[in-house]
Length: 309
Image 1 (tube, helix red, strand yellow):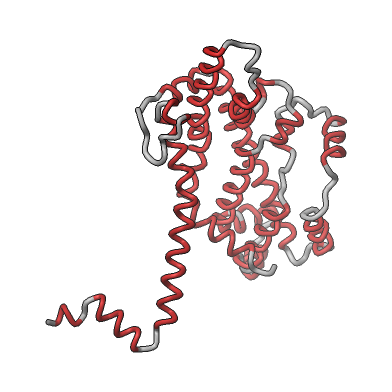
Image 2 (image 1 turned 30 degrees about the horizontal axis):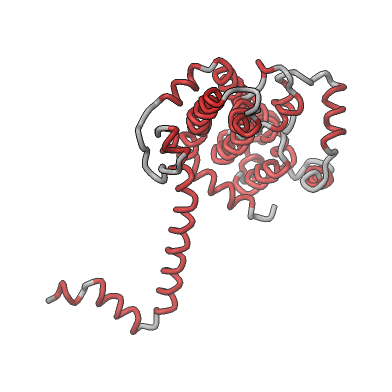
């Protein structure tokens, strides 16, 4: 009898009698909305994964909806056999690691400098940095500048361009201002610490969360960047994985069917379908594996950015 009294239905009736019906409706609406958003976000990922493992004929005929049909690994075999895909993967990893390290280093040191209240003109410098969030030089002037510096067809162009993001800069500066007490830095200075020591012995060890956030932001940017490579890199041996993925995704759209026979055309389309979904999965895997470890820092970074600094 007591278990019946405390059943979920009775608890629900009790809450309605207590005047909590509007809260229940709101919670139910939020739950349904988030469930719908989750389905919309997850379904494309599940479909791509299933399509990469399915028979291309089943994918082309629209039979694959959620689960693989005719499981096979031919797409992954073709991807790993492709020399250019492996070169692109190597280049993307290299650009991401090098670019992220340099970007985090420059962003953190610059943000620490502008977080110091004894820096003359820091508000003016911050204004010019924020100004670039709305206005920039444009594509053609940037290309002319890159060309004049001799960075066209150089791997350095993907590392140097965008080495500092204004939004990330402001997030880092705000974190340092709000999370590292000025009294702690003053105590270190009294003990004889230099400005360099304040940065690397005080601020740097206490900035683990923001460093993880910056690494995630910059890492995602470098890994997904293809437009800069498309503009500035003509040497295929230097191009990142996203360029080769783009070529495979567009290959079956621009193939000249009149130049080859029907059987060859069907085989070309079939092989493109096999590699397309497999390459999407492989190219997304590093970020998917990295994100769960940095998720809590990612959420914290959004909250930091909402603080007025």
